[in-house]
Length: 79
Figure 1 (cartoon, rainbow, N blue to C red):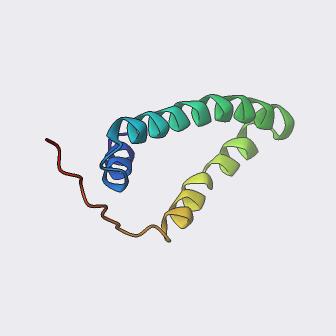
Figure 2 (cartoon, rainbow, N blue to C red):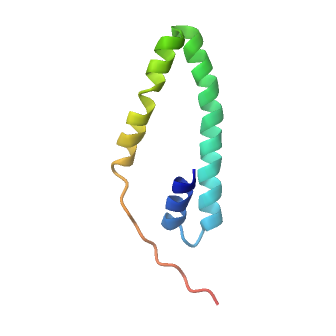
């Protein structure tokens, strides 16, 4: 989680709390939904096929990260 939080904070340096909250909230929410979907998938297709299907998820995540670019937003001076 920490790499995703740091990346989000770099994208929104003036809203670090918002970036952290959204990143962690999405991660935990997606994990909860994913657990339920995984259970249904394994009930329908069986354990072997269900786990084989889940092994493809990292490939999808890697493809989704390809268009990400390093962007820097100037930090506003505080004072």
